[in-house]
Length: 347
Ligand code: SAM
Ligand code: SF4
Image 1 (cartoon, rainbow, N blue to C red):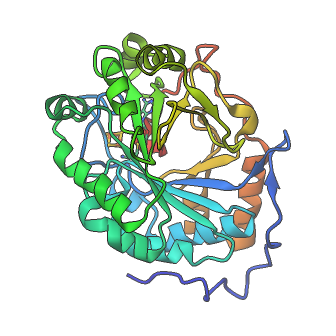
Image 2 (spheres, protein in one colour):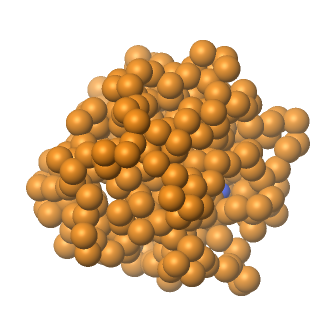
């Protein structure tokens, strides 16, 4: 594999992309955060993310190569993106993940590199990822009961994920954040036990509302538990939560159980969208710049690159796409994303 290193910046035929100019949409929102899906595949099959049957995965040649991926990241850095998150599918199953992390973190302008992972492979990868420059991880864990975990992930092993969480903490991928999608009749009675992890650990446990993406619309319709309901349940057990100030671009509203070492986050895309503060776009594993998680409008960067476009042309298309980024995802109005599932977009 040949990785493009930051020193081999761009070909002489490319016209310069002006450095660190913030790229804004038509509403004035500056885009500084790129979420990158490294693969649409996964070693789990979570009930709220993938259907039990009929999941189709992309062929290898449809996915961005390492070189194409790094080229997009380099151009994004030139456009003012400073934060990257690697996701998927499951990012840790992407070949050369450690080398990719190292190369991305080395691009001038990239100040923060994090990953959302199911944690299964973190036990063996955490130290190398940290050494390569990964700053933080969010690990998905919806229950603390091994059998329930197996059911929700359709086969996952909780003990290995737990080892992954401990490895992340030990090597300094901090603050460790744990993501739990709350689904009725699956894990809504366990939110207290998950929140209790923050009592003596400096972690953030984040409760996510389930979104109705392709393949899991029925799970959403039958299983949505709002953040408000989760908060009521937590306050019944722990007393009133104390609000904690969070950065404006954090989609989580952050709280603390009185006296706890860690915090609790509520991510409420269905009941309280945070579109006004959105600073992110996504890069799908097949090279589409996706302007909003839940809207179909995408810019096909892969085909541009494969047709020989130079960096300046790609940057222009990225800017043009970002300019037309939609204001809201429309869930409250009943709009649905019906083409891609969460694992294909990069949640
Ligand atoms: N495989 C990794 C993982 O599970 O952490 C990264 C990809 S996963 C798609 C990213 C995040 O999206 C996870 O925290 C997962 O729980 C969340 N997620 C998946 N499907 C969802 C849905 N329908 N609604 C809300 N969150 C979802
Ligand atoms: Fe895989 Fe993550 Fe989706 Fe679960 S939520 S199936 S771990 S991509």
